Image 1: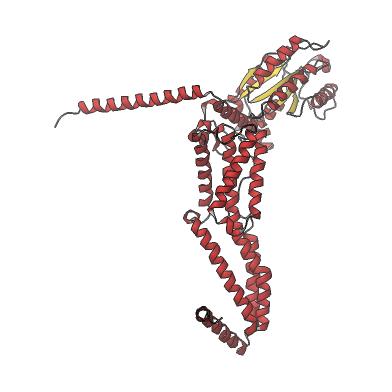
Image 2 (image 1 turned 135 degrees about the vertical axis):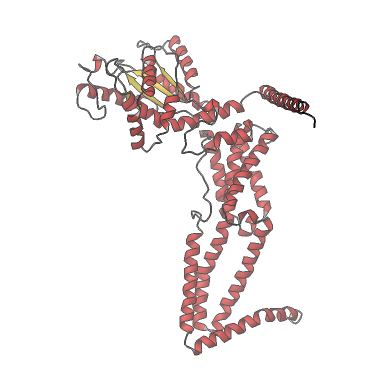
Length: 523
């Protein structure tokens, strides 16, 4: 005790004047009978602070930039499973001590742990799952993650000026302030029992938890943002989609979701595969679609607006490329080797498209061949999890034929109409929906009569346009996958060619400058 007398002197010099002011201030308030109002105001300010701090520092508050935990548009089903590792790692941040969140080592360790988990998910049989990653692609992932995190931090006032030492100092200063405040709260009841006890209760039960929550929310937000951005681009890295380079990846993925515009020549036109059995009416359907898209689409635009869809999808309808796949054969007596071969050929063509329309002849009693094709098409994507399954719909044709009723007199209401043709077509549509796999989300009926067609503009085009947002996402994933799976030799040749063109252009530019200089008249 005697050995530490210097510390006690320093403490008395620091706290003594403060305590004296408290005592004199309390006595002054007591003599003027303002002690109770002042104490009540003090307690009320503490309560208001606690309420506002608890409300304004929640994770969902707009004071901090929100983090997007939806799987990005380039993710496939296999990637979404990897995204769960990222979410779990971010949730782990809630259990980390506040002091540790201000230490740079926690972020380095988190990066290593997350990188290894994701690498093992994509390459479970590899002894060194990280060692096979190209250095350039790894640097691309780090660059993109740092850019995203930098943009997020700039949305926090003063976030661009914070350093790692600032975080530590802020935690330490907050700790010192809290300790001093605790000492003051414990000493105040000695000088003013009523006000002091009320303030002590408010401090311990409301103000102190709210203040701690405010500090933790800011640091935990930064930790979750770090894991979010790092995890997203590590998934893109291990999936191979960063092989296209930083600039092209930005061009293809960082666009507004509200605008439908082509940003790359290979993605400028959506490819729609029109598949079906031979004689189902694929060619006639494509012809009708092209005629309808070239004409007045005001009805389609109205239906899109009513459904809350972007009217700009109309332009995607006009520029869509409809490709007829080879027709597969049908055999009511049983499937043959020829049927399987033609179906396999049709599937190989259909999986190259961004969207699929399955054309089904409504007059046929059995649609087993169509169901088998849809299942084979679906199974192909199950066997190729790195690709996203495109949106698909089915179109029942030939409903204008006499098989469904006497006279063809559109318009029709296939959903609730009571005419004989409407009832028959509705029954066929219900049976078709029940038989097809769930990946085919829309089933519509059209009549392709030369004189009075029905269903193309009224039903098919609105349903088709509603699938284009998913088709764009499928096209993007397909493009990234195609680029990432190129052979190393072809990538090397392309890079050498690009460098050669760059050198040639520089030489031509330098030669042009020399010629221009030689023609300049001498003064």
